[in-house]
Length: 270
Image (cartoon, rainbow, N blue to C red; front, side, top):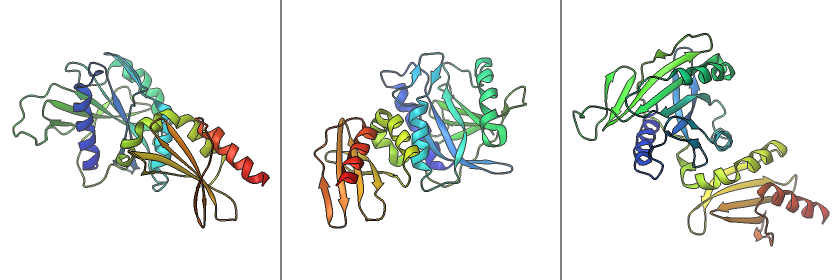
């Protein structure tokens, strides 16, 4: 695990437990590098506010995670989906039989037909040093009262295998998306559809009026102009970027893909 990924998992798990939905399970999808004898996790994608969850299960907002993966992989094409982490109530540090039935089918679709699975529990014994993580077993990380237990599973495996976890200095490449995760979830399906229909789109986190905004830039062919959309809270702002500057568009359309095609149609008609 990149150390920033490990920090994000523990910090967000701790924050989840004190939230209004803290009794529910939660989780993260993991992106990284798949090598011959190891996997290196370099990004964690939260289950999202749109997840379906209770005390015994969690279903991630996969549309948001798929789009977030697209954004992260803009600059890191070699990244792929490695596995998932999800939390368990009590002291169940091992994936359940229900987890296995779903996971063994799921890994068949992964590159290498093998995945990494983390189980989060809040059952650690008193820490030896406050604020410092420790490993009671090669596949277990603990921080405070939280534990992450790690396993691997291949499509032909009859059970999960404990997998040793080590930290390496590195980023969580999904960290820049955390401030705009609400906007990402709200518009993920339309933005992902837009990315499949048009080429050359660029997604980024940009300065907004009051908070960071999720921005998409759609280049126009051959003339140096581009359509720019900024998503900040409930606001959807459209601009035309030109070599001479940016022009605000008088367009009120919350459906971002529809708004982009309306602008492109109007520009093509001029």
